[in-house]
Length: 196
Ligand code: HEM
Image 1 (cartoon, rainbow, N blue to C red):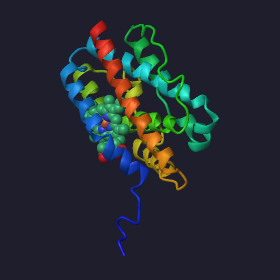
Image 2 (cartoon, rainbow, N blue to C red; image 1 turned 120 degrees about the vertical axis):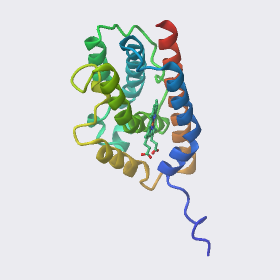
Image 3 (cartoon, helix red, strand yellow; image 1 turned 90 degrees about the vertical axis):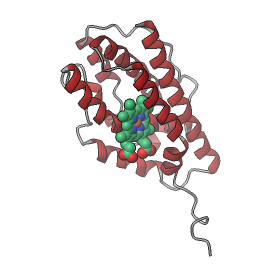
Image 4 (tube, protein in one colour; image 1 turned 60 degrees about the vertical axis):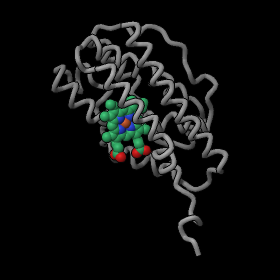
């Protein structure tokens, strides 16, 4: 009996594995854009984060996403990013929502990218503190850990992703949503830094 191929990969593992290249591209783009080299460049980064969080939180209105992720009220950093921009005295400008046509199960892929980025945010927060003197109560609120802690809120999300019941077609839609979300964040970063 082949116990390995009898068990399909968990959705969380597929997401991590199949978007690893896109995650690396984000690292490369960040290295190129140097968002922590000045407060002005950091403000462009926060504006990109704000517009991305608007895209993601727009999905919270979908009852199907609320049913799949019952703790949505503790997630999302749109308000924090907007408060950071106010701290920095920056107007985020306008950006059309990218998610008006996104529904479940793609929506879960978008949320995966947003929630996953809270893990990397621990490292970004340290850099922002050390290099720019900002912190969780001023300018870097959106990089702060959730009150319950990053790891716990992430593990709970992974638990929801890996609940049995999503068909292979639905799982593929989650993957497609995650890929679209990574592409959107890259697009927003490029736009914000081009306008800076
Ligand atoms: C230079 C910037 C970044 C750094 C240093 C970074 C770093 C990290 C680290 C250390 C983890 C945790 C890996 C683990 O515990 O296994 C992580 C996970 C993740 N990051 Fe990033 N990250 C960055 C940018 C981003 C961006 C911009 C996004 C999305 C817009 C993103 C999305 C994710 C996702 C989805 C995960 C979860 C991976 C998984 O376990 O499934 N990251 N990142």
